[in-house]
Image (cartoon, rainbow, N blue to C red; front, top):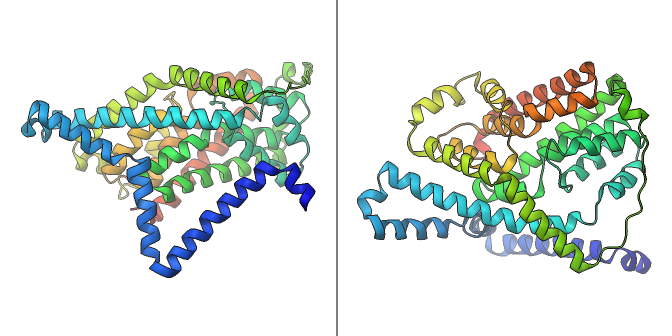
Length: 372
């Protein structure tokens, strides 16, 4: 046991902290009541992560500059929403990308490939999906990694589980979603994303569709590069570069998303939104899935839109369907994927993901009362 702790010191520390947090919360719940634990989580979600204090501060500043009459007008509320959401998402994004990129520096593509090659069956699909959550790849940049995995002889089920989860589930997105919708919604999003990735990869492998890749993918050579030891200073430098590169790629999508969210939040009547995307419309999930597919953005750009839809009473299942279709089925990524796989496999992939998104949407709309 002592040798295991020496070999996995960092993992042991992480697990120790995790169990300590669980124990402390359980102790507080038993002594002071579970409502106290809920209040602690709500404070952390809405004040620390959600930065509601910043929203109040911006409102106070705008009221002082333009007057309270402007602040309560649609223009004032839109301006407050835009400034607050932009600052909050940009700040949390930079902070989270730095932390996660530092962790990701331990999982370069070659090491990821070696980890995946050690597992078989459903366990391999689960590991592939989980690794997709800690790798810094969007839907388009995941495809070259998918090609490398295929050339390395890793099963199609594992590679597609990775390909689905990599853009769909992100540790940074978990925290950002928790800051807006709370931890239950954020955890639910991550959970269903991983389930979809595992089931999708498993079906592709068992059905035999995974063999329909373009010839150049399997014919190319696979170079197994040895990873050099990276110092902590180099990891920090890498994390800073990832923050800069990520922000450079997504800042415009975030601003557009916040602008759309501001319009939905303050200018479009709630009745209109609910008539189209409300739970009472049986086609709301289908509409959200179809609308989201052509949009090219990562999950960070969809969050402010999802936030505005949530405030208008749109069901969580419909919101999940929209977010998932944007991140997993964007047209540019499908065009790139078509260059690597044949039409039969492409349509199988699209069909599985679309069907999964629709099922998830209707299921979570039925459970909507758990997240309100």
